[in-house]
Amino acid sequence: MSTKDNQTEEKIFEAATTVFVEKGLDGARMQEIADQAGINKALLHYYYRTKERLFNAVFEKLALILFKRFAPVLDANMSLEDKLRFFYREHIDFLKKNRSLPSFILNEINRNPERLKKLISGYEVDKLWRILEEQHKEELQKFNITYRNIPQLMTSIAALSVFPFAARGIFEVIFEKQGISFDDYLEERKKFAPEFVIKAIKGSA
Image (cartoon, rainbow, N blue to C red; front, top):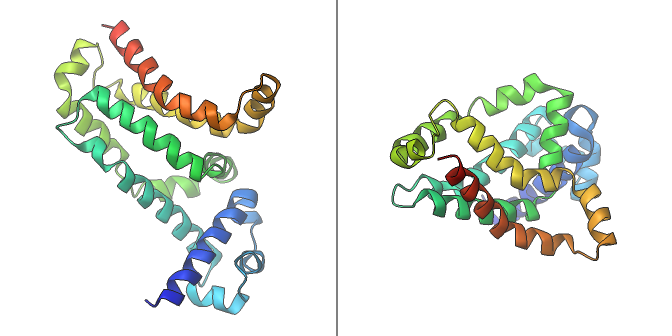
């Protein structure tokens, strides 16, 4: 693929993400995405024949970026505490660059849960639970965390970084009144969140 093709696909990806986040799959129009990308509709259809294919491509590309970025979490040589610190640092950085992503996913779940369920089913999320349980079995047992309640732990961990972005509009208003920058808050959260979780886990022992 030529440099020009790569640049065009990148423009389409960015435009489609913007439109899909704002309007979802059902509300988005190919013409609107083409206009946002600065190309004609025929060229958009050349790259992606249908809106559904484009939506799937956007979701899959974001998922691939996310999974590649968090690959070190599967490193058996990294301690559980270091993995938590790594996760929050990388996850918050990723969401800062893709601030509308949590709203995009939540909106799509509400609009059509079955569609997103089919997309997500292609990724073995439960594999991560098995790997964590195998790599940190002794640590987790010491903290009374079993394979059965690892999903509880993981969703709680994710919520600490996702929720500020999902409710960003509210937080920004509140923080502004207190003279707090949302970006400064996010930088502090990279350190606060993992230590909060670590203390909570150790407190359950």
